[in-house]
Length: 102
Image (cartoon, rainbow, N blue to C red; front, side, top):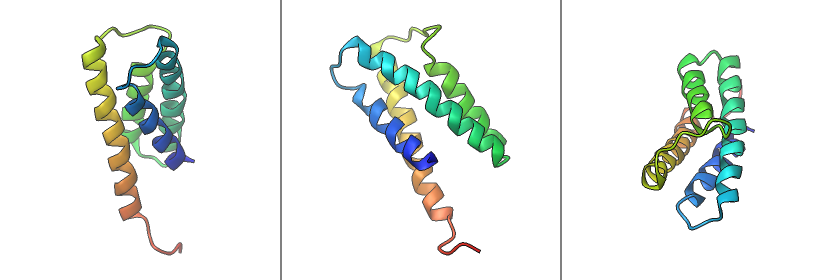
């Protein structure tokens, strides 16, 4: 499930680079809040405090209730950094995974 959330959020965030209607950005903010909150909870369950903090901070950054106005260019940079980070975490987790469960 975590893998699907990371892939989905990465795709949504990269889509923000395209010319989209305002509703798309609202949807991305809501789904990002939900996705990062779930990832934060999962990290808490695994006792990964630094990941929990990062995902929690990202959930607050993308939340749709109190908008943080950074401007389109800066939001595009933030979106690409976060999407890249999610992809890197997917690759890192795949390399760290054991080939066969114990």
